[in-house]
Image (cartoon, rainbow, N blue to C red; front, side, top):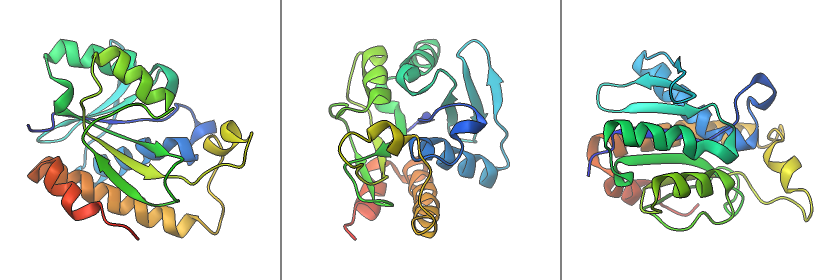
Length: 186
């Protein structure tokens, strides 16, 4: 099934720019830049939207934990199925800069995904996880809302470039084809 909507998860506002939790927004910014598309605030969905020739990009402005409100409204409006949505988000269970496509499944403790699953009524939607590394015990919030260490920056920049290519491949050839190319262990 072709992808019609690509959702990047993150938190709005300058305070959250370049944080680990905002890698989904970072990939969407790169996709829009490469396509010459511009994000426009869409009040009805409380999201920023950019249109590509084959899909729509969405950055929910509801904060991470309520991402499903914005995305669910768009799905219902366009009558899209969850399988036609690709979600890009951070994953603390993957090493920094690792990429992993998944075709569906649980939220795995990620509140943004929990919200999407609740509002979609399904966990059967493809996703691209970007590894942000594991926090020390008791430091989850500071870790995900923190910035990457200077030593991690070159690696994460490369991963964001690769994730952008992976999403472009998913849009042109399908998520499974992209997964076959990009789901490789380092």
